[in-house]
Length: 272
Ligand code: G3P
Image (cartoon, rainbow, N blue to C red):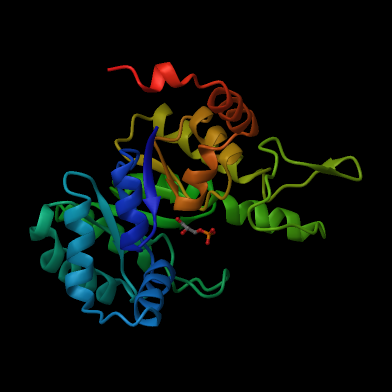
């Protein structure tokens, strides 16, 4: 499984690439706002074009998702092309992130602009990351429309399931891949019992029909969920830096190091 860093913060991105664990980057408007706010709060001047170009150079030879902010097909296509033309020449690694469906209401039948934009940009050779995917059928349609990447949002599915049954939780709490039961029934959203279940069903469909799209398990918030994304066969997991850090931790590792450092003989250290 490839690991992308889910961040627009250049310090975090440099850290993950410095460790050699990042195979790409995903950003979204919220992550970009967080990075911009941090930069400005620290008193640094921000030239956004140069900042994004620095991100692309850091990610050289690995893909970077930049998201559109428009919500109609025509404007998403126009903005997607503009972003691609402006930034792809820097390191030839830009893909355009398009929401599968930019509707603000589930029932709003007039908002099917996302899939149209996925189709048009993909057909013009611009790689697309189809985002905000919450069902395997959205993933199937995104694959058919030509999306290179498809991003099911695992953590937000878990949030929804937990909220729907009145559970109290922190965003980073682990939620079982097999779901949970309440009053003898597994909590589900139309046959999806957890975020990892969504990822797994998306992977199964993509593999079963030999689509070239890759599934990016997104909105992952803890190490066990990342492990389960790998076990579910996700092609990619996009992770915040904190989750990558947490994946490196184990109390027995610290305990082992404490014992080893207590046993160091000076003759060993002084070997010439
Ligand atoms: O990759 C999607 C991600 O940025 C959303 O994460 O934790 O806000 O659901 P989260």
